[in-house]
Length: 212
Image 1 (cartoon, helix red, strand yellow):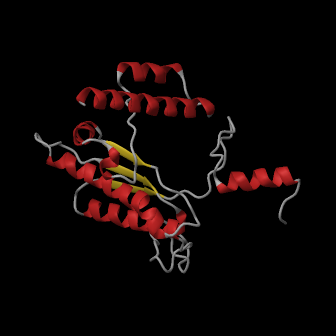
Image 2 (cartoon, one colour):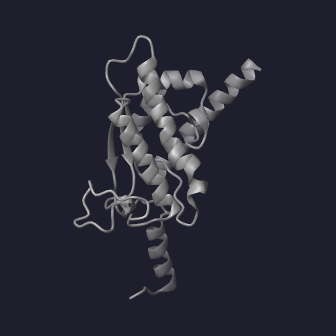
Image 3 (cartoon, rainbow, N blue to C red):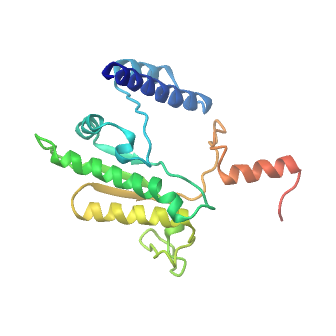
């Protein structure tokens, strides 16, 4: 059983590496230096799930992450503007909870880590308060006063509140980034082809018209 588990772990890591490299190749960002990083172990790719406890990783894997990860860029989420909060909570809120548990685990290790981990969280401008002008970063609304009140925006708001609470308790340092619509790369044209704006423009091109 142990041999089978180890084989599956290696296969999962290889699948994750291939997914990352293929995606970056398709977008024109992969280079030979990154291949060298993989071979030398400077770049490690783990297969996980934001909606699972410990991201679906083993307890030992989480300890290794806690010992070695100083900065976390939390950019993953389940984006669906039709689904309700309950459907999105496990990934969008649960994912942040697991990130903060990882930070807290780092504090509990022996010997203790000397510096706090830093979490950079990519949220959404939809959490800003629509009743306040100007709409600046500090004007975060309540769920009923946000620019958008769907399940997605609400799940991002709750995740923000959890990160703020962890920051105040000294579990981690945290920054919150709220980008608007992201357009394709000006040099390569690379984009998220499933983004609604890209799909809208593609649809207009295919239909030969646009909404005035």
